[in-house]
Each structure stands twice: as C-alpha cells, then as structure tokens.
Length: 525
Image (cartoon, rainbow, N blue to C red; front, side, top):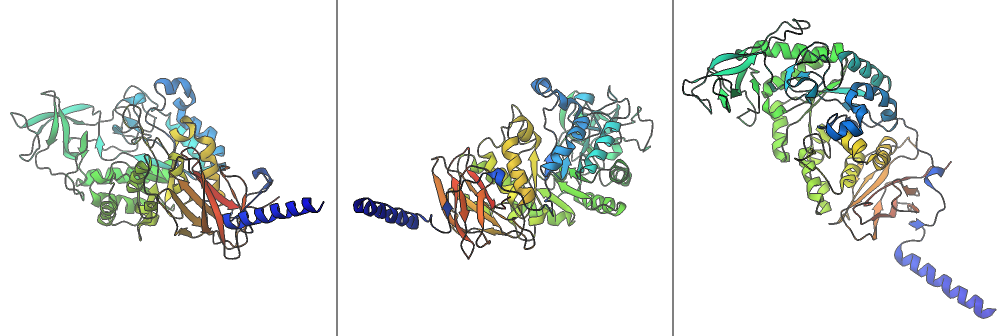
C-alpha cells in the first residue's frame, strides 16, 4: 500500500514539475471540457466597418454561370442575401459599375458608355446591365439599407468607350503616336440616343477628351493626343490609361460628372464611391469632386480610390497631392506583404508594412487580400497560399477598413472559416491594438485590449507561416488580467487563463491550413 502511495506521489511531483517548466500551470493552457457552444458572445454595442466586394470578373459567365446561376441577377441576389450578410458583420457592399457599358449585358462595367443609364434605357443592345435593371438596383439598395448595410458605387470616370459615332480629330505635335496626315478618325461622339437627354442633356465630343487609343480610319492602335490638348495633372505626370481619355480640365465635363455624383448619392441612394484608376484622373478634379459631392449630402459619403501604388511612400505622396482628408485608398503595399507570405516571409515585418501602419494615415487605409483585378482566371492567381492568415490580419486590426472578396467567400469555399473571422471582428475586435514584442520570423501576434465598458471583447491574434504542424507557444500580454481565453477558430483546443498582469502562454499551429488563431475571452452561459 505504501509503495503505491509513494509511486503516486512521485508521479504527481513529476507532472507538476513538467507543468511548471512548460508554462502549463496556473496562467496557461488547462484541460477544459467546455465547447464553443457553451460560451456566449459579448454585447454587440458597436459594429466594426467591414466591406464586401460583391462581384468578381467572371461572375455570370461560363462555368460560373452554370454553377452559380443566381449571380446572373446580382441585384436580386444581394437583396436576398442582405440579412445573412448583415448577421456576419458586413456593413457595406462594394458594387460593380452599375451603368451601361460598351458591351452591354456582357460587360463587367469598366468600359464606361453612359453613367446615367443604370439599366433603364435600350442602349448597347439591352435595357438591363450585366447585373440587372435600375428598378432592381434601387430595390436592392432599399433592402440592404434596411439591414444596416451601406452601398458603394464603383465609379469608372477615367475614360469612355463604345461611342455612337466617329469624328475627324487633328493630333497634337506632342502626340506619342501620329498618322501620315496628322489626324485620325476617333470614336468620341456620345449622343446616348436611347436615353434621349433624360437626367442630363450633355453630349460628348472630341473636345471633352484629351486623346484616345484607336484610329478608325487607319485601323491602327496607338496613343493619340488631340490638338491643343495635354494630359491632365496627376502626381505621376503621364495619365493615359485606355479608351477615350476624359479631359477633366474641361468645365462642361466637370459639371456633368459632379451632377452625376450628386445624383448617385442623393437620388439613387448610394452611400459612397470606389474610384477606379484614380491615379490616372486629374488630382485637382478628384479633390473638387469629393468636396462637392460631400457638401451635397447629409450623409458622410465614403470615398476610396484605387491608386495601384505598391510603395507606401508613393501612396502617401499621392494622398498628400490630392489633399482631401475624405479620400481613403486601397492598401496595395500591405497586399504586397501578403504576396511575400505565400512562400514564407519574416512575419515581424507585418507590424511595419502598409499604409495601415503608417502614422498619420492608418485610418485612410482600406485593406484587402484580393479583388477582381488581382485574382482573375487565366491571368492573376491572387493570394493562393496562406490567404486565411492575411484575412485574419486585416479583420482583427485596429486601423483600416477591411474588404472581403465575394469570390473567396462564395466561390472558393472559404465561407465557413471566414465567418469565424468576420464574427470575431464583429464581436471581439475592439479597443486599442498592441504589437507583441516577441514576434519572430514564423509567428506574428497582435492584441486588441477590448473596451473598458464591454464584457468579453478584445482578442489575441496569432498567425504563422510555418508548415511543421507543431503548436508554438508565446507569452503574450493580452491586456486583460485573470481572464480565460479560447481559440475562436477552433484550431487550438483548450483554454488559456491569464495572470494578474494579463500575461498568458497563447498558442498557434505552424500550418498553412490551420496557422491562424484568434483567442477571445470566455463568457460562460
């Protein structure tokens, strides 16, 4: 009997010793039979801004049309899904260009023909656009608003395509390309016969453009600058991108586009704009457009520019040049870091990279992982590894407004895991953000301290670029003393209890498929 007691005592001492040296005693990992279903979420007093890009390039075409036929009528589908999107924490939808474009029902919308036709007039061989009719769009906006979701318009203002007729236009002596007789036949007459001057009687001709890229007479492609024209002012000098390049030094153009912007917000009901190819548009007009549209509305109109600039210093320079505090931009420098993470990177750099980490500009960053340009079939594969790690980063951060990509969520089968991250953002990602001082090449951690008057919010994020499958432990100050945490993702089991200073040994798996954990406080039922 004594020998049995003695043996048990030795075993107990041995286990306690192991627990002390592995950090599993007192304030760290303990065995716990609770499941996530036994916990409740904190009160949703606030609701973090979270955008979903509600389209992708191939939507409604080919195999996607066959497998996701409901996407053919996008406006109807958004109305149908409004409630479920609201419930997971989506607060705004970025819609595709809703206006009539060059290729009618087959056009994604970036070949702008008539901004004032939202699927109402028989133009380009169709009344509806690729996504539906104006009436369906307005109904969807109403339902989305009723579910607390704002709606942002993808405004393609840089160029026009699909003109109604050609004009003979003389070229500038400074034109990058010329013809033998120094004039071309340009597609620059836009009369919009189907609309018959409804909403606007402004009709476009070559004087409203700086140049184009096609000569109908010689059937040749080039870059043709028109007589007595110069490219608009941009921080990068040469602004030409494609199509008939809009001249934003022309007062008639300025007036019509501004009137259209006011109409989109105040009559149609949109809440903001994604400004396509914004770095190619005269920066002075961008500043004035934002100012004028903002003044026209009682809303706090949202503006985010697609300035595809991957160097953060250059992106800051662009913002400073436009000089309008209402303008946000997509954080392309941060996305470049996610590309580096595909094949492994020094994870410590994540606390410094991107506009979202640039002092004075953090709240002007719109963060994203992929979009319709960076992920396109046959062209760009996008972020194809460690994508959840990238989403975990943007969805838990204090600064920046994150965007979730429709194709990731609904098409690539990421919905179940993204829902966890979205709900973690909705209920837990509050309070000041803190970098962790023991980040290393393989593991990045980040803390949200929670709000003082809310029970159970705050979190500890850990992401890994490792592949070994082992669980890594880091001693982290959660900023929440004597608090029990569990991994909301379910990738690491058990609970963690912090000590009286808020420290605990938090864990993450070194795995591409499960290498992200979001530790949140336990509130038991």
